[in-house]
Amino acid sequence: MANVAPAYQAAKGSPLDVDRAFYQRIAQEQGSRRLIERLVVPIRSGRAWRVPAGHVFRILTIDGPQVGDLNIWNAHNPRERMWASRSRQLQAAHVSTFDRLWSNLPYLRPLVTITADTLAGYGVDEVGGRVHDLLGTRCDPYVNRLLMDVDFDFHCHSNLVRAVAPYGLTEFDVHDVLNVFQVTGLNSDDRYFMRACPAKPGDYLEFFAEIDLLCAISACPGGDLSVPLWGPDARDPIDVCRPLGVEVYAVDAPLLAGWKPPEVAAYAGGHGLHVAKPAWER
Image 1 (cartoon, rainbow, N blue to C red):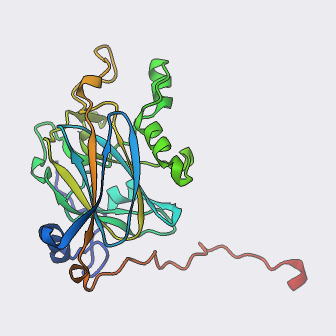
Image 2: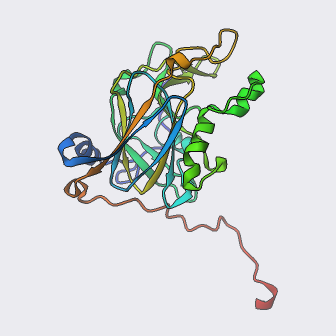
Image 3: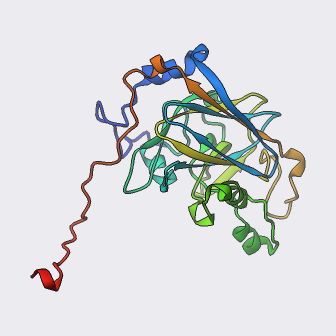
């Protein structure tokens, strides 16, 4: 495949030009942080949690390989949420250290920056698979009913719906995900494929919260994706389902010197529309 230039490129000093030294310090100075929350996501379930701006959170594989579907919102305004497709364009279809996950319009700012990835060395496998996927989306009961004519209430979409309900959010707030620890790619027919998760116990993907966040993750009911989920060989993969862990850390203030939460996009709006004055003002 030709190594052509990406469509979106970072000018020096732009939000795509990440201050790597800053995020390396956040990741490396483990003694300058303290654990403030730890939770376990049981198999085939979802959990939600808040992360204040300037804090760090990790998604961990506790007992071995397991895929997780991650959603992120502005904690104060859930209309602002992770935009998987724009993140894919601005960063990559599979993300790792120093990549960012961006919010939707009209906000368009980084919600998180990835600070550490124990699977960064996975690279590109022999069939073109890569890890931490923005190519696909969450499994859902609607596709399950469409393709298998069976109802199942513990898909990632449903897990996320249940996880965010206590925060006043609904199914309409659940959005396209980052598939954490998931290996995917496009085959020679340009069709999406999934491979078995390579994570080992204790692997993690770590994020720096650029603004106050509400996060939710589903422990995928497909488990580590080593078992066919569709087709003639499909079976229930419950034996390859494992829990996920989440840890949230406060970072010592001196490490945050010079950092501030990003502003929303500077575009003034309007979109070229000209609104006529009401009759009483003419």
